[in-house]
Length: 600
View 1 (cartoon, rainbow, N blue to C red):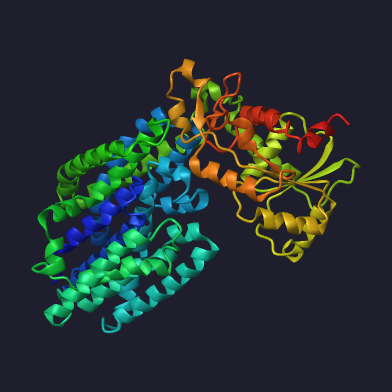
View 2: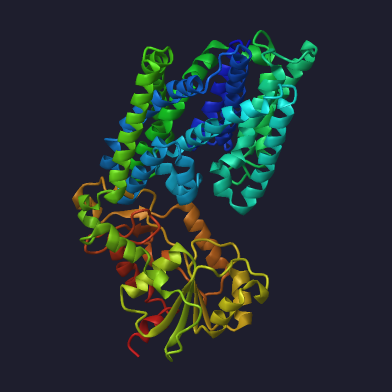
């Protein structure tokens, strides 16, 4: 029989606290996000143990299994989703609110990990402002449990003797996939079920090995040493992993292995197990699910409310508020529902209705593009979404395999979203009217030789009178400059990065008379990157956009002279922003030739 172990609840506390500290940007645990890995292992262990126990007793059923999942996950989750609904429109600009609506839909369908894979990254700056960022882990876990009971029933059909080996083999395959994916597509790896499955499967395999026994038949000192090593691995992972670590690949072995060792070897009556079974830790562990749900929305809304990064005291206050809300949610929502006061049929009906209503609200927000009509400063044209999409995607009309050979000046612009911003800044001011313009988002970075450039692009580079690099960030610009010049490119210009502050949502909360004159502080990492590029590149190549926009105090405008928003996200240009920034940067000596082409 799978008996209750208070040390596992204590382990949940050890997992959730570093996650919260990490999201609060406290420096103590740079790898605190690995607490989610711990939760996955615990979940795989406990749920597999329950399934095996019920199968052995002849009372396992899929409806009963999914009923427990609904009772465990839905009530607190949809309470938190409901709590975010009035705050999001009050604090979010249209782009952020539209993404929030998409997240509502995805979270309601337990697919936010899929949405995040398609639209962003977990460590992207914008992620800090997403109230539902953390629900990706719930989506992944529920996707796993849609298929895992069926898989377990198939694998256990011949008996449970070989079940641990089968699950371990699947976990090894998943880890191999994860290790490959973190190099090929790190965002997809971080959020993907196939890359994360090994963490849940490792806990499941351990449950099969232990079969309800509290620990392997080993001497007490050996078990205590194993549990201690597990705890060291766990804490070490929280301290040594960081945003650059290739998780969920091999580096994730440390928190996963540490969790497995604690579960396998700890004894709640002594040593590590006794420490984890300490009542305050167990208390945090009991409310850890609700605590996890509440902390990220509170952090995100505190950031959205602020013009600049809130101080540590604000995050500490949000943690205290999250703790109060978590205790109340656990006591008045989680426990009553989990104790079965609502019948199965009613429970499934309510869960379906809650999902449908929440997804419907999210879809409405998405279709309305985050209600841009709320803000005159955005200068959104009538027709909103359609015309804004035409503006955002205008650069793609300039994609071509070759120049048109009209006799006009040949301009090749290379890059992604910042390159499209550059094209918009020129087009809004008519500066490319006399140019043969081609846009490419396919020119590789970090070129070793001309052979690294695809032949079609090599011909474009060789014939370009102007080659404009307008990427957000690259560590190989000097190297790329040498290679494209060897191919025969004419004037090569690197357009520097840009930034308009930390949080545009907070700026919009300023009184109207303060907005127009407000100037934002350039983010430190953007400023340092820009300074590094300026040092590495010759002055006849680099256009220092930040230098042209910022004042002597390192601050940049947020609004155009006629009071229109320059950027919604702090990086990319609105249409009025493109018109304003274009007038500024095309005065640079390296770009005046493009501006003048319109008059030739």
